[in-house]
Length: 285
Image (cartoon, rainbow, N blue to C red; front, side, top):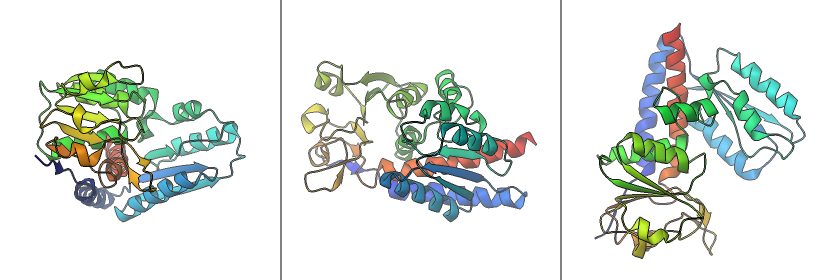
């Protein structure tokens, strides 16, 4: 068996075309969805991510604002900027790029963002909404994973899903989303004993720890679906994920590649969340 690839680039393009269509419809009603991206400092990776997010917004017809600040910006000044964006009716989504300089409390900044504009889905209110099934914004990376499963027509009902990783950004919300679709979910992490025994039971595996080859072919049961959220570099400096792609491809039924898998979906779901925020704002008018 050779696994079919779930093409994140192709799925992203489909979803972004839908976002562009829906954005044009909103504009016809006099409302342009707006995203503010705030970058503090000069982290090279953050600069690339921010540039890609702003370009994706522009390509889909959204209004985007990029605010760049020196690393010396005070926490109080950043919080004041966030508050001003909360009060700006032309902005429907606020994203403060992480990591922030060490003197700024990232959690305090995240909690300062209005839950109505928390399109990253990191606010404690968003986490609570996800846990209870209330309306809120889902974190973009696990949301993208759910869309990938949806794209192959995969029903999670009664399936066993194993999530490797327990971060607040991917692992925990991923588990809750899978649970909402009636999967039985196991969360594995650095304290898990005998990871292989658990992954061999899984119908779906999501690898999200940022460690190369955390999942190898002997750890996957034939026909499992494998989603690779990892972003690492191999010995040659090439981008790779958490999964031994070549080996696992010979066992799984579906697999996401790195690059070109989950990565493109993350920014796409940011656009989806921003559009949804604007639609909610219009309906509340």
